[in-house]
Image (cartoon, rainbow, N blue to C red; front, side, top):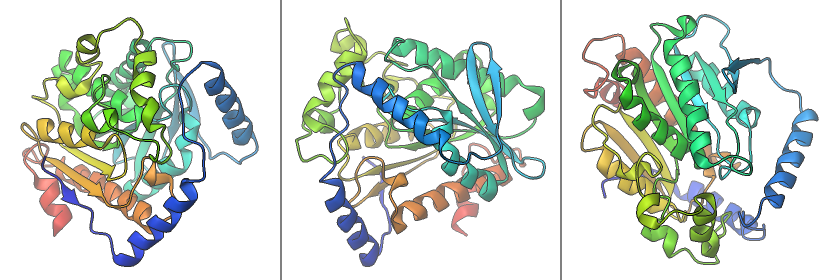
Amino acid sequence: MAHTPWPASAPELAQMRAFNKKLAWLPRFKIRNRVTPRVIQALLRVSQTLKKAPVAETRQVGAVPVRILRPQGQPKGVVLDIHGGGWVIGNAQMDDDLNLGMVRACEVAVVSVDYRLAVDTPIEGLMDDCLAAARWLLSADEFAGLPVFIVGESAGGHLAAATLLALKQWPDMLERVSGAVLYYGVYDLAGTPSVRSAGPDTLLLDGPGMVTALQLLTPGLSDEQRRQPPLSPLYGDFSGLPPALMFVGELDPLKDDTLQLAERWGGVAEVETYLLAESAHGFIHFPVAMAQAVLNHSRAWITAHIKASATPAGRHHGVAARELKT
């Protein structure tokens, strides 16, 4: 599986190992019922009311709410952000800090999708919400002519990849997408080998319960049915998809999901994939130097692709990647 080890220094790796020792004391995230996610979601909303939120615009796209953050001047591009949370918790506001960093560094507008959650809605409904938001963004007059990027983390990575595959029904819309940035997503809902072999020492995620959680998410389906795209993006047709940037940690039970997706996607488009030593699921939120370096690289990648999109040949032929390396 083609990937590049993330170039971390010895002090950065030591800092991550020290943080992992703290993570080991925390309970693992489990999806075993509908009650616990509702409690966590309620606590999230309470914490958000206590924190000063940035200036944001909320808009209703059909039945789907979106949250829009804008740069000071005219945006040079627009990002569709799809949050994580195991499909059962989270909201668009949860990504404000990350998205503000992207707004400022890349001079883009960010549209974050407040998709329904799987505690009340089948996962296909979540996919429909993200597709509806993407189609609105790609046809909205206010974003006409701007390069578009889709960013997703964890469950949001799954929904981002599924959205791109679904957009193949509208080739003109898909052609407008200049790139995708995916952090440690879930791309096989029957479970890749690293998911099926995950043990109790997995950080943040409940390793032994991951396959059961995926089965609870897709009730009544066989593994063969779970592997049908776009439900499992790993098995989709990637022809026509844009360049992608992917990250996953060595300690993440979802490691194989990213590495296998990158291998398949990389057969038809420019794909840059990084495997981070000593890193668990969710690492872009950790207060460590490696996390900030990854975010800086992601923002530089988007900026480079925005510049490359101004040239006719730039979108699919690696111009942005070359610019980023020089």
